[in-house]
Length: 280
Image (tube, rainbow, N blue to C red; front, side, top):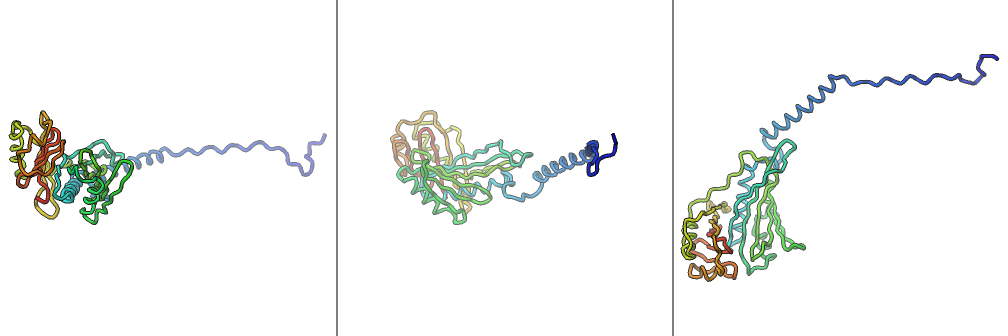
């Protein structure tokens, strides 16, 4: 038998040798890891030391005055109503970046007006806020709402809080903590004397610890201030307990408020406050 292959027939060939896999040089892998670490360090140093390139990077110390001014605007927008400043609330645990912890700051204002319709009151307050805040109100299944932008990524919101109260808040987003938030110190004012007089009328000791909160009034060097304490025992009938004092500002079975000079004193449950607003 002849070993010649027929014409037009290709003799079988062995399969091609596999191309050997190319291994990356170890130096390239090491360089990649080092570059990633360098970027991480530079990012951390930039967030810590550089001027912010976006507003969210401002620290609580930088955002605090914006929140304080917003609270003053809310007090002024409430007009001559009974207003109580709430203490600040700082919530830690959020993340500004994967490498940097942060916190949020919130301050609040409570407006007491049981006779007012909540939606109408929120609309009135929204109309009195600065035009640049673009304040808006609406109603949903949870009731009337207010929302505004106080600038520097500070959100303002408002909603009913029950018992004739409207709660207004100014809140930052997650911010680097930095040096932390320092609330404005309350200037000396007549609130302490008014609170002491109310305590004497109630037959309570005048040496109870008092919490003082302040906010700057817009366009002036005055402050809105609230002095607050919690009674050990709440009077069953606030109007009857405080009726002899001052000029009545508000009287319901749950809340009694009167005016003593420039100060409004209000008793709601066991909370006793003495406050001055921005129109005092």
